[in-house]
Length: 216
Image (cartoon, rainbow, N blue to C red; front, side, top):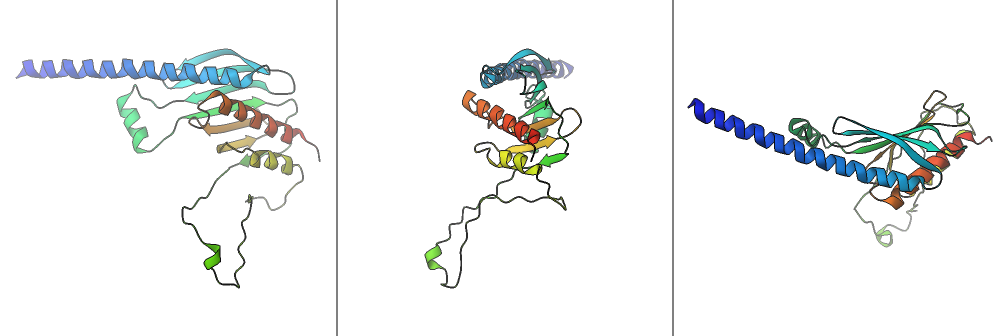
């Protein structure tokens, strides 16, 4: 009986080791693709100075940009912990996504503390306007800004406009702060899954930086 237990244990350990090795290599390969996207997105404006893996699922990338873009820029890529079977299963149950987080300082620190969230509400139900009563007025609104601020300062407007102009990017969260890092933004890694999308994301970040520095 003990002989069979030993054999089963050896097979289990071997399979877990094979799982770890294969998905560690998969994460490293995916991380290398993300590095290429980041490098292409920076173009002539910036370059990767170094990168470092933290475990098998976290990749930290350090960037250097031209002046008047970003200072102390860094990107954190959080991949699913595929090599760790139990951790990956928990993330799968929680429907966690892989994310890319950008952090940087600006030439001029923002004077405002602002957390920005972008949401989209969609409905698959189509309403035929010609079937509505004649006394109904149907309006198709554009973007709506919901704010927790009791007063709205003019300096907020360029930043919000920059976020609303982010056509293809659904930012999880963007933050402007007088403390370092002045600008941070998180996005679903699946959205910046190629070089053009990554380049557009960097342009949106620059628009946010410019908006934060604008004086009204």
